[in-house]
Image 1 (tube, helix red, strand yellow):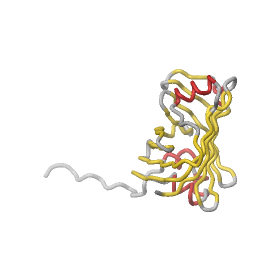
Image 2 (cartoon, rainbow, N blue to C red):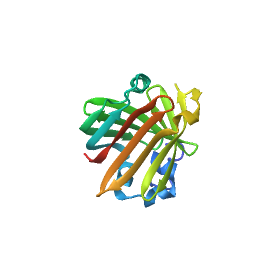
Image 3 (cartoon, helix red, strand yellow):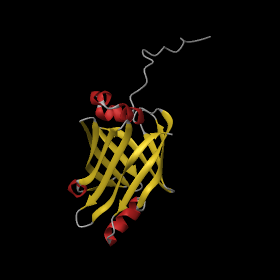
Image 4 (tube, one colour):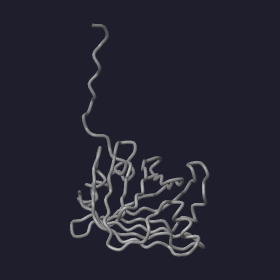
Length: 189
């Protein structure tokens, strides 16, 4: 036998998840349901219900189609499957049969979410036990930056209510109006 054996790692602690990286210490003060969803490592799944309102104008419908947004639905089933590693998470959402996939990662303290041809950059903060997402940048195909002020109406709130994870997402654009607004709840599947 030649050479030294491989050195043992100094720690066996799991690497932080993407949301732990973005939020830092405030992550650990969040309610249980938020920490559970954002602490998944490997494969996980959550299921619940969702209400979706899509914009009705021509430009809103066109932008929604390009982004692959789900259609309007009332009290629809929602399932989200997660593949999570320390560098990236893939979320596979099924909104009552309409699928939407996004990939999330932490870079320079921001959450980056790629959905189809768009890459959003979100500043996340916590307040009152909730997580707030605010769009601070968008790129097309990862290279062409769009003016951040156009996306000030793209926001998300995550919170716990009655022991359950709840979310609310809204996307509005100047001159276009509402692209989509959806809200609902999830529990471990």
